[in-house]
Length: 586
Image 1 (cartoon, rainbow, N blue to C red):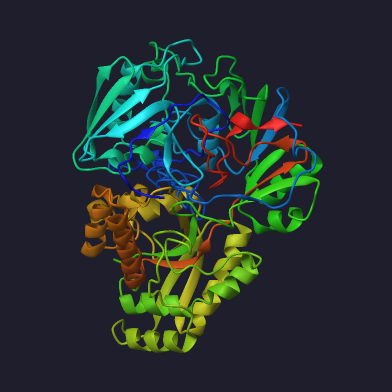
Image 2 (spheres, rainbow, N blue to C red):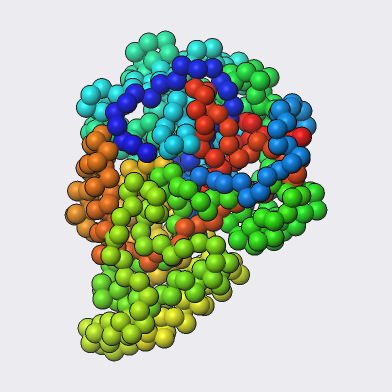
């Protein structure tokens, strides 16, 4: 992936399927707890996603920007003879099992995690999409081009695109959407570099920025790149806005916590797509129940972060399986322990070093990830242009014990803290193992289970010492700016998007260099500095990258990749986000 100033443009006609669209939004100090992004979906799931967690949408991992979403390129675990070599065909209905339920179809107020982005990929389109090489390519936009300083961006829309209600997509509608995002307490803070937008042609909009924003096209592949019909922005008096987009399927019905159904859009601008007549999503929160539904035939496609799915299905020729264990585009979702750097005892860097040294991550991976991943030492995996050794402290129990003894003198005796996670049997067992490791180093550890909505609220307000977490999936590191920036710090009791409250001016300076410079070498150096400083500050104790998988019955094809409108290969399944536009039944 490179951060050059090459204009994003696409000359071609629609070919296959869109790339992954990631979550993107941010919390605002004006929010109440009930309004917090991702309420009910955090912990080690998603939060902002693709942009890290600008949307707190799934706080644990795939937050709103980009969280939460995803950064990994999928691989197919085994060939599927039933569909290999066969041309896609139209028709049929598919039931899909999701990991959660959403709170809203509005991109301006919905706290979208991977499920929210999947729903969005069904009825909406984003302005850009991520290609297999990690670049941002035009999708609903025909081109996205900057001025030399990257402070002014021109978005030109594709001609002839209609919303589901027949309204034409034009520049005035796009400006309405951008203004709604800027004015939203959820998405506005994540778009703080943007000053405004104006119509400069029937299909052209000029977006002005307060500072250079090199990664702007990547933002348009996330939640803030979704374009909805005017009826959703200014609904008729007394009418509840109905979800209306330009996407491959048309909203049919939604019964929260039961199902969401959509039917084929006969006027979709990508000729010949979609293939399915109908798609229905069923939120099945329990991993085991979701897998059982696939095995029984109740659903034909599902996503999961449970490694048991890989173990049970990867050698079966009766199912198609795609996972995110191999290559990476940008940043993958990361599993880690988040430490509060401003409350005792985790405000003491010696304590944080001791906790890091006491973690036997390889043992944890063997126990809880079936040995499928490798220990992480930073944000970027090997193979990423941003990867470099960070000096992150690895497992050394003797060193951990010595650091605990050193810290005890400053804390009046024994070091004690609380480690909390969500009420999940797998998470609880993992925290028990971590508790044992830290106690072996001489730290007294109590465990707690916190529902996801409370977990998110506590993280935002700084009321925690140590939390299990999942976050940071993003096609471009700038989408995670808000999670590491000193500009998003706040005292305990106030809302801060920098959850760990890590105050490092070197990180802030590097983030700004990465945001403002188009030179790939400057950006690589900047984000390597961020990674190195996080390894020194230790607000996050890295475990491993998150394993996402998508599994389907043998007659389901087309969910693991496709082509963008310009003919480029789209990024494959990532971050638990599905796109149904090219899915077909053989």
